[in-house]
Length: 215
Image 1 (spheres, rainbow, N blue to C red):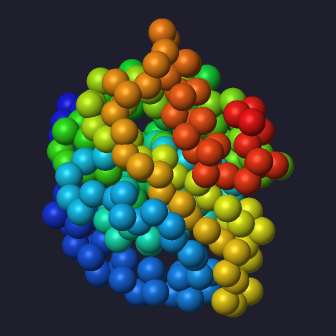
Image 2 (image 1 turned 60 degrees about the vertical axis):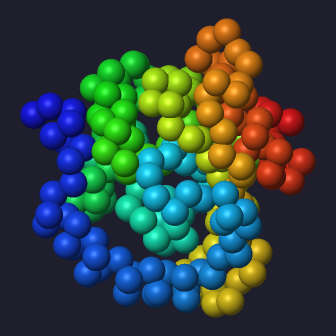
């Protein structure tokens, strides 16, 4: 199957998303309410790349609940071997990514998603931060940003690492969106330098004690 074919949404998947998303969204945001900042920076349509810090398992689904559009995520391959979770990831159109080596097929498919007008979500740190502080990011995201030419929107999660289902009406869970930019707006000689430039934009939206490798 070609990358373009993999990226083309299936009618069944779209139907399932339209049927299941509204009730799931309502329930999730009731259990863990989220304060959203910078929503004006989100394009109403068209492709873009969401790049965020990763501190909790709720980061990917709650981001999609807030935006209200399907997001194509890149996730580490090991997650697909977890019972039930792997099935959910595959049914959700999540793309398997080999973390420790260049995964050109995954990158090509991510580019195909963007070419299709979809949203791609990436957490460049590679895994959740156990301390809540930013970790040094892996360089793949800058390659996608540069080759696609799609707008990049930095996302900062605060408080999701302390959120628990059933602790109603929490107001200290925040998702912040930064201004869109293009890879050409960044200064850097290699992919790692460009990725670090993206991460610094995320760090600027976090409290100083959470900036970690990018303080």
